[in-house]
Image (cartoon, rainbow, N blue to C red; front, top):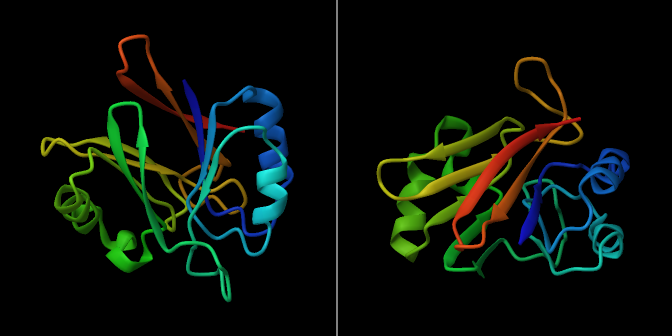
Length: 160
């Protein structure tokens, strides 16, 4: 199973289109917020389940603020991250994931990619931003999650 994880496209979908051409087929698409009204376009781009949560720039949106989903044997907590002070660190996100019984928390907001296999048994994933990257080098980024034949999750940060 292959899952594409993106965030912070801010209504600029050109790089998402490029990524989809590179990585298709995918079994699921997860967008972690700040779509700014492009959620219908994003859903129409793929023929698989799509999960999108609202970001701090998704004003007047009907998108859920957070979501809990099951991916294989993993309970996954999806959030944009701004309610958990994600720009200040990932500790509150880890604590919330543990409180919800989630093994993985995925968030956006910081525009910086991250995969953290913490000691507290919570994997923290941030795909960065496809539109406005903020990490050194400022390359648009996304994350691919693959479940191997044993159901084990593997994550990789990729850049355009």
